[in-house]
Image 1 (spheres, helix red, strand yellow):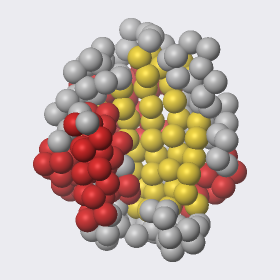
Image 2: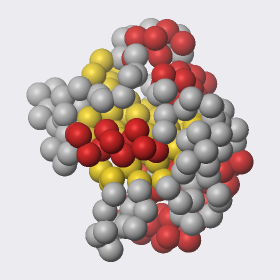
Image 3: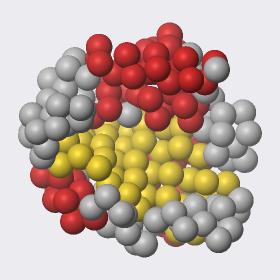
Length: 215
């Protein structure tokens, strides 16, 4: 029940913060909102077996000095979940957080040994992309609503390309800007809060490496 309440609080927090901030930081060649929207429309609701973004997990693993390789897809053996999913685009659905404004969310799943490693890239035409990620951040890091708000404030002040690790150490967010149009950010989650095998600095380095590749 506690998890459900925190999830609902996260949704409320998003509603209050999604319109904050101007976004549009010029990140110079960073992944654009238009590109994310284009990918979302191609991937569709059923997802795909290959990540549509130019990530190189081997190089990311090397940058973070991991002892194991990063493999594509979820850690669960025999899982039929797609390696990549996408949502958003340009919609008029009033129930969608993207209603009336372009927005996109592309998720690529990997694993290190038996631990899930998920890379989310989100874009928003209005406000800051990290606001869309709040419920996912909250759930993955096991944060309460105050901790979630504090983490959002920290990520909102970060410079493009600067990884912001959570207190739990198993997630890190990297704002990317969007070359002057909208806002884009990357979120990497590793395992569960308090149970992740990766060190906090490795999670931050992985997030930074994937963000540098998302061009």
